[in-house]
Length: 390
Image (cartoon, rainbow, N blue to C red; front, side, top):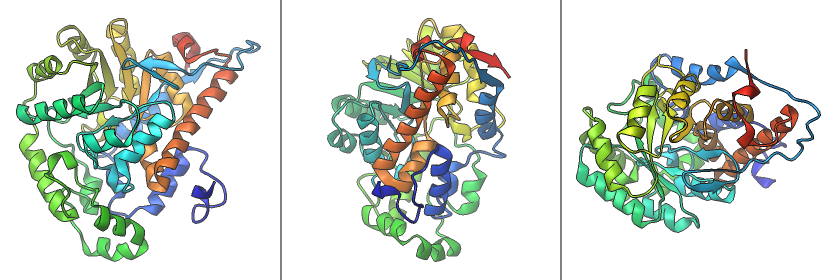
């Protein structure tokens, strides 16, 4: 396919890691830490990945399972595979088509995208560009008028599920971003400006399309610098360090559709979200290792949360998923489905919407092949009996 002709080589990427390597080459150095790195010493980023290596897949031979069923249902939505696209802020930094391209790729692939509060395109722009219902992620602003505005806009535009992210009372210490100058507002240092000559298309799209700043924080599209400055001021104004369960309960009361609490890492918190708040589900997530470093890996936290609330709500996983085998392990440990973040963002950087569709297809092919090799007939059949501790 033409998308993958030079300079990326004669053959298409075969894994999410291939896309990561290509994206790093394609993007300016200052943007890469924002799209790939995390907090402090990156311990939690590593644990998100290494947690999957603690398990091995059970193999049953001669089962005749040569057409495994990948379809599933979560967020009251039928999906072609148990994988959706996580909310990620400012994906316009990866490619100017941003959230519109991501949502279109998701629905054409039989799944859904969760639009971030910090998106580069507005709630309405994404809704108008897509055919199906998608989902919306809300940061729990201290300003209830702003939160109400965003929830009302999302409901009016046809978003059917709300994901409230509760693990960002303050921003994590992302030292790699600070060193590169990729802060909000961005610091355009001499080295970054000189590097523009190596990435002229990216800089041209930055200046022309102005899809970098979180659009829901600013009034209209501003210049790259002015928008970023206004965005950081708005973030600081809205961020709620003293967020508590009463705030989340208020959001649950306001939102009439499926409601999920994202950023749960403790079984007691999961129980509170379900039993006291009335959440339809929880997303086990440590924000991709971008907030508190040295906390537990997401896949390591999953079993205890499933044991506590898995019979009463949907438990989803977001963190460290890079292979179809990772999806299988998460489902076998009790997750109803998983989210991916960095894999689709890196694909977006390489080739826009088509590349995002391709990276979803990579997961689909890996799931299909691995289930056949395991002798498992469907994703619905996965449970802990299909896993062996490493």
